[in-house]
Length: 237
Image (cartoon, helix red, strand yellow):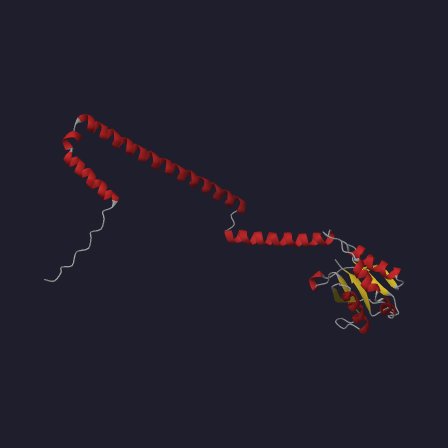
């Protein structure tokens, strides 16, 4: 005879079903003892106590959740009052605009009160003076302009004193009406008579400053006096 395949084992009963079956078995086996008044009273007391404990725990949990909901509602109301009825998108736009104004104000404050005052280092002075003869060959005074805010004046004076101590002709320090920050005018700049067209002498002077480690930019020198160099030195914030 062919072997009959064995049926697979039945799945194990869950713990709750096992407990109910055990309880049913105990009740069937010991129902007479369980129905005695003292035992029955004890079972009722235990059942009522368990029920009361469960109700109490559920009530505590509900109270905690309600307190959390009240707290969140209070926070939401406070946020709405502070936003003045604005939507989240409107509030976000207002915050971005406020941050932009703060950044702009901080930028202006750094111009007026820079964290570090600019100055020519001993190494930069030495490198510039090493080209003294090349600067003297230009043959005319170098005009120096400076804005009168922040450290621009003291930084321009560093250049003026360096050139004068080396007997290099200079004119200034001349007041500068403005620096066009929106056009990238900042720091050390060389002004040109013709916008965007540096002369040979202007290019040589810029190279001297650049070789000394200075970041030099070009700008347009609108009111260039006659009989002077075709470029000058601008010091901006």
